[in-house]
Length: 159
Image (cartoon, rainbow, N blue to C red; front, side, top):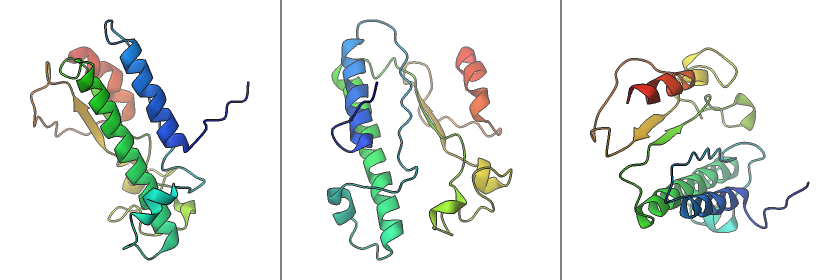
């Protein structure tokens, strides 16, 4: 079945995630939210694009506007956890599966790392990996060992 999101897909995914959180606040649940931003096609809302008028390169400005929408979406999800009274005892993981692609026409996107998505250079594999669970993980904790997306399941079992 074809589904039209009725707006910017990053905002739509966030809206749906917020609904899932509210509908499941009284029981354990798993929510996997894989935002489309900042994947191709590079598209942003006019409001996000206009808010970044200091970025002169139009392609970089659209990409940054997509990151802005992603950041807003993450903030809304975190706020939904708080509003529903479950933020303290909910594990939130923010990560990515790979570095940025080289085909976006933004040559400095992975700086200072060499390489792109689909390579084994640092630019292809170095990604954010944040975990938040105030009831179980001490704020400010750091793990210095390298980790990978595949490590997520055993790491969760250890917490």
